[in-house]
Length: 93
Image (cartoon, rainbow, N blue to C red):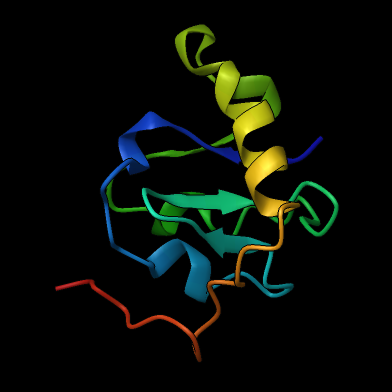
């Protein structure tokens, strides 16, 4: 099982969730953050840090956002830059 970033993250630029990821599984695309399912270690550190409540375990992903499992994998594996602390500013207030 991995974690998935869903629709509430679209056009959100908070990076709190990505900054706590110990394996840099988050990647930045033009619209949102995505999680690389091959890198994610299922540690759950990102879930409580997401200010828009967009991060879910695959098992808890609401049905209306089920397409985001594939979106995360496809985009993260496409070569997007990692959204680590050195590549993105933290937008939290």
